[in-house]
Length: 153
Image: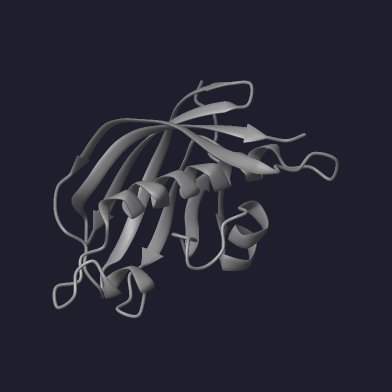
């Protein structure tokens, strides 16, 4: 018997409630198609006026790969926080623990919309592991498996 999906979403206001990150380090604009803590898709609209493009690289702006991985981590972290949040229990921090099987496939440039497709691999207490794919117009641009720990005390 298959479990029913519980689809939801999080606009930027909800993302700001769920995560401690703020501009210029917030790497997601919205999360769509949230299925509990099992999977979701985060969206990042890449714009030319972002501060990293002043040095990466002048005249040829390329969105840094490490920020794609950070976008994956923030997307996954937000749905974990959303899943455990109650009036009494709120996440204080989300700590990145691991990055495995990371590959960068294509450059991301201003004007692209990156979609972070995150799928839970495992969870133990406050530790979570996800498989992530970053896609632009359906094309795979980066992938990784990530782990994080939520601190609630």
